[in-house]
Length: 365
Image (cartoon, rainbow, N blue to C red; front, side):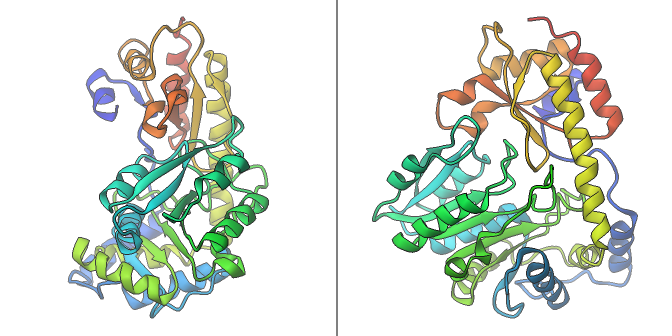
């Protein structure tokens, strides 16, 4: 969709990357690190200073105690952290529970690691279908993937829902792989909760995070995995053979980002909340039916009635005839509902969203 957007000179609300600058402080830290010759391999599982800072951040924000020497692995983005985690814990024939809608990598990563994905559709309001979730667990279940806040639908899992997941994981001896890359982007006074902060989940959770979304540096590819030392040891072995290590100067720059004051994160969420509201109103006026996201920076919208097209065809039509790019909903679904949805991102400048709004006024279904 991004390539088509370039070809057709469309506004790109498809791929989830900001079109505004990263903070100056973190960019200066990156260039300084390069000029100061932090240009060779760091320790495979991440520089000591960065691991220490991640450990401090985890206890303060996530309420997770993590020994930086044994429990934290710095990776090439949260994407690699997920792949390393899956390869570390999965044996062929294991099953992995994945909530639907899901981030596109979860199914393929399960398959690559030798697992069978078992999809559990969320309810229409994106709450957990308890009966479906309970029935998904069996003797073959090895892991469950959580994404909170969620890409593509912006769901923030509640404490009640996380307690349900925790109880089932403990009962069936299942590992929770918790993707929390959007942890600071939550709206409407919602609270981000890490399932690893629950006592019974401390030793059976792999928490994935990163800096791409928090500091608007999606091209830097610096992420991390937090887990108890036995799980971390396995993750580190896989990580070593996947990528050897994350970029050293950019690790140093992310270390600078972790020193930002709490006001930075409040302003980040506030900025995205205003853009969420603008895009929600824009899409609603254009005939889309939207569920208001509670976090992350996407809106998953039902296509206007009367299009006579599936999601892929309509996405191409939007780009070529209207001038706005979105992602077809079937990218995030294993089942039929995805064929009637599109995902839009509001991780863009106000001017970009305003241009998209002007173009969507031309939509005539």
